[in-house]
Length: 365
Image 1 (cartoon, one colour):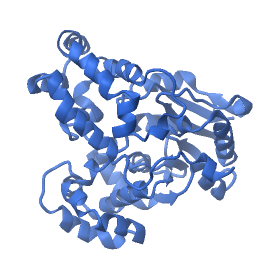
Image 2 (cartoon, helix red, strand yellow):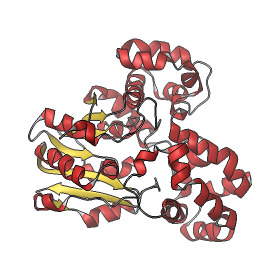
Image 3 (cartoon, helix red, strand yellow):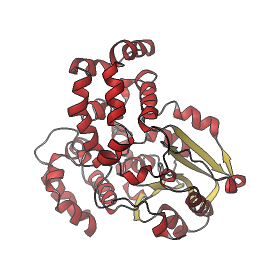
């Protein structure tokens, strides 16, 4: 496969996602990480790859974007060096004036590329690196300029308060779901606005239909059927931070386990299929593929998927999301996998990151 043809024509010179915006609870249940297993994972910011390490698996995290790898490497070495409370301060979740001091203590453990990247971004480190991505800035614009036109602070606080299922449905119907919410949501989360301010326009090359309407439907589900008080993604979008619910990898028991096994995480730059091929046949027990197939043409999906299958061990599982483009195992390769549709649908009902329209889980025969 020509790797250049399979690269999305997107700008990879900066951190696009300073946090992972897929729910790792689904990955942990779907891929069943455990000691003795090796998983191949899209790195992104590193959160979900670290969550897979918590259960003892060896994880090879891959990304094309060197800035994303710098973000993941900073997380890895910060977890190695810092206790839980200090990490929360350094990352930008809890307040501190000593983030640059913490960085200086971590810096010697970083590789030259990560050192160079973060040395030039002291302002980002001082503010907390979890707020540094383009996608996080997009949500900040929504929080600062759009949300105040829709609801008062007390209403936003009310949405995040613990409630029973019927109370959440009533609150959404009677208080939250007004005309301004529908109108401004559709404008701000349109293809044009997301491409300009959030994701790269190239990531919509294979998308058809209205983007905002599909995301609004998923937001309705997440704000009613799931516990809004226990949703870290919703909390970040509406308040700018992860409180009171921390992401999976930062929950104290998971943080301790990751810190003990931090060397189980290997970071690699390249395409996921190229790294899989480099490891060779029967190398991986599972794959966290984020939503990479959305950025590829159907022909490219066949090529990438086929290369991944060559590196798979028997009963290896492939987990990935569809956001706006329907993707699953290409029909020409379908005889080699077993779709786990019922399990995937059940897991998707628990998905707190409500941007995606489908969770796909498949198993190698």
